[in-house]
Length: 467
Ligand SMILES: [Mn+2]
Image (cartoon, rainbow, N blue to C red; front, top):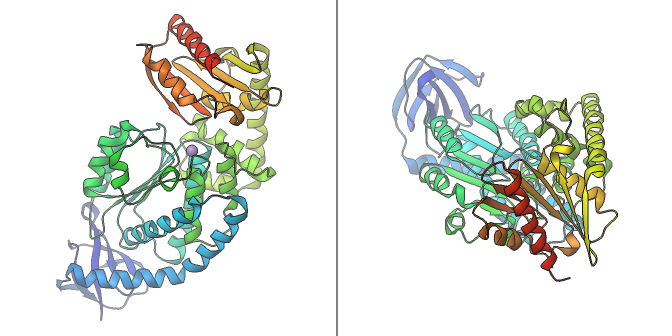
């Protein structure tokens, strides 16, 4: 006879995870509760229907804690955690000269233990990632690592991947996650995993609510104000919190986390992430360049946007499909860049160039939704900046004004401060935010007149900046 402790219960379909000498998924026609100790005949199939077992007694939390800690140590050895960590440090040493890396990896190592506890005991896990090149690079790195765990450690069947279309952890997301988690009774708390979004005031209430009952592991690189609540979260791993900055992208942090789990080569996702978010650590690598263009296309096009991450994982591992999508995306980009260059207006003062573009003029009626204005502004900015060293690019569309500035002038032009000033001086601005080189303003309603006033104000503020 064998014994096991019930660690996770999904009552509506009587599916359970139990821990014997290792975790097992079982189905039963009898209802079980967490901490139930059961005895059953030896089994070989890890996803069995268990009919012939007895509930002996309840295990105590302390008893199970000990078992779990021991097993985690065993798993860390099995996945080669210490080796993976050393290799990761060595690999990053040359590419990313930043003191925050070691501190981040040490914090990620602690987060990994927390992650494994939930993973191994069959707790539900929701992984939300931003729908851009950086967010999905991070998600794909993690997907590869978790696939490795699923195959070699345990089939946790309660993992959900969710592409996040907003940059905040909004009420809708919270309600969905809470509803999903409530299907389960678990020894280890359910886990919300966030990649590359949410570090703003608008997320706080939902985060406080999630944090009451569940765990959060949160990888981000967006600058956050002094939001005390974030700093109380032990696994809020934001590069700024470790004296890094946005150049240490969320995709890179997720890559580091994933590299602690798997020794598969997932460098392509690290490099695609760095390119996608214009990190100073990005290296010019043809494959990573293509990957970043493809991922931007996949996350910015409705046809692909609705695909699950497992489908996207299949696509990025299919050379022919990748080539096909790359050519298609590249053609659309080139056409739109050319139309943009024809329609752009340039203001020139001292050495500063300010380029403005009405995004509507680059779109043609039969166009698919790709490319989105925010992403477009980065791409056209990159093209124009080959000509002008001190460049600010402004692309506007509907309610949005998207601003990009060159790195070499971002010390003089405090972009976020300028946007805040513009916001304060106009009642029509709803919000503003972003990085020091890429940011945007959202206006309350679509109105050409209002937009023009704000544009003029913005340009005036830029011209005031000292060089
Ligand atoms: Mn990012």
